[in-house]
Amino acid sequence: MQNRILKSALLGAYTVVAAGASYGLIPHRTFEDKRTLEQEALISAKINQYTNYVEPAPEQPLDVTEELEHTVRSGESLSSIFSDLNLSREDLHKIVHANATGKQFADVAPGNDVVATLNADGELERLTYAKTPFETLIATRHDDEFDVELLSKKVDYQLASAKATIHASLFEDGTRAGLPEKLILKLADIFAWDIDFALNLREGDQFTVVYEKLFVDGKEFDSGDILSVEFVNQGKVYTAVRFEDNQGNTGYYTPEGNSLRKAFLQTPMDFAKISSHFDLHRKHPILNTIRAHKGVDYSAATGTPIKSTGDGKIIFKGGKNGYGNVVEIEHGQKYSTLYAHLSGFKSGLKTGGSVKQGEVIGYVGSTGLATGPHLHYEFRINGEHVNPLTVKLPHSLPMDATVLAKFKAQTQPLLAQLKQAKGEAQFAQN
Image (cartoon, rainbow, N blue to C red; front, side, top):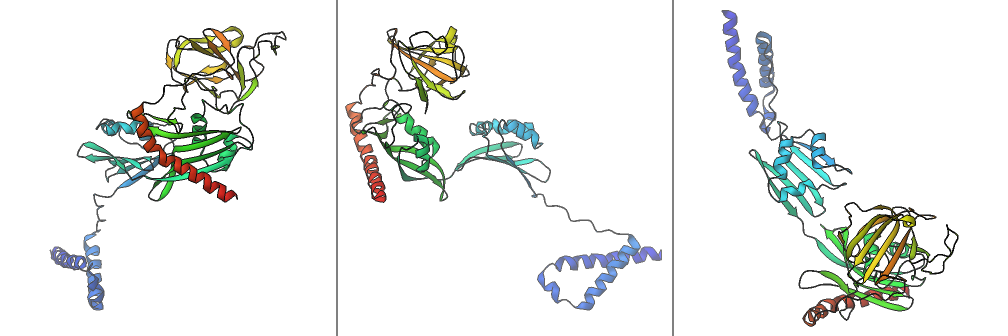
């Protein structure tokens, strides 16, 4: 009975001390009398002695979260990432089907980051995906569903320019001048109808480019479009400006408003070398007999992409004797092209299907009678073989008069920028 009374008394004392301790979290606790502190310590010791009381650990607050970060690897999908992070597949389904924006989560790209924020119960509270340096997808849990939104930062566009003289190749000298790789490829595309970069490039040729640099939060993260460009090839000057028409279609035009896009590209490959010319009396390298070479051979590494030189319909795809793997394309009623010795065809390509100019149709190989990897390219007019390097290619239609006025207004500043860039480069050279 005495022990029970003592225990009650001490528990009552503990209640008072506990209240004092809670209050003591306020800073003035440090000014309390030293003797009072000693008394409280003695009472706490006696409570533990008589009651075996163990003070419980403080509970974790409910807002404690954990962040799981994952950098997307090649071949991964959001589904496989959820499996790796042990996240609910049901939550994944809710996110992707939350709204139209949620479907963008299905297209995660290698190198980008996915961050999953979990609550104290281990449930997914928020999923963040850095889609681009200026776009972020965010899925946030509300009750048992998710809201998905796309947040965008402001992108600043700044003009930049580059000037180079050809000494080695377009790619090497363009890179040396500080032009990004994708813009060098774009430059080749712009003049693909007028300049054969495999055959006609010469040392001393020059180009000047005005293009966009993209910034977010003051940091450069990418390059934009080429706005204006001049290329001097063997003394002939080619100038192009970018223009968007009333239908939202963009293209490159001469300063007079003539489209650079012609019905056919000069070459079916980028940066290839000609290994054999059109020759109706050539000696065949394997058969060792005089046999007409009715096309042009482009030497390139196995697997190099091959592009259709014009819009058209595939009339043959498959093996054909010494040609090996072949694609034949019909361009209207008058023109046709042939691409031979391919190592393989682009996935989904089929006879009867349509292709667009510049679309990849296959890859360089050495199938059929070939001494090494190359593309054999033929061009026919009304069924007759002609030299692809010398044939006069048909042009596209001229610009409408009303559109021409808009074109002049939009492109004059771009041509002025190009002139300024040329002048600055010349001044720096001098």
